[in-house]
Length: 142
Image (cartoon, rainbow, N blue to C red; front, top):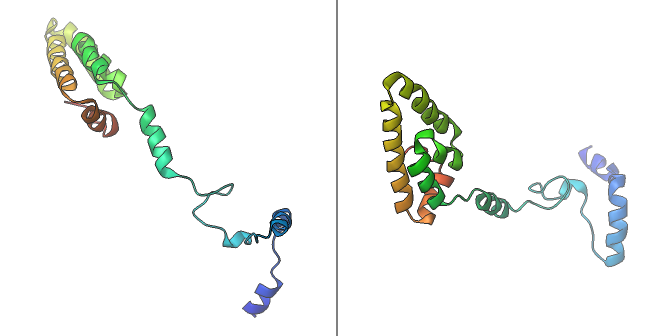
């Protein structure tokens, strides 16, 4: 009975124009159910390596900018905003502002010292190491 079904199975009408063009060139277009399942519904398989490379190229951040932001504006978390670590940046900003009001500036000084350490760390790394550690792996603190 299953053999009878496969014999009566007709290819979709969508394939008719493709089959006509393929038969004119001597190539046979396989039916839809025989297409590569790894591909998308509208085209060939997607090249994941190219997508990963393009995504990595967009995420590139310069270590010198991050280091200088950390040294000069680190008390406000500017280097964290630059690297895309918004949660950590808001924590540093709020501790600097609220903590300095409550502790007469001691909290802001501690956050600034921590930011200077991070800035020096950023500047001592090579650009490749900086990208690997802080941009691709998203290591937020130190």
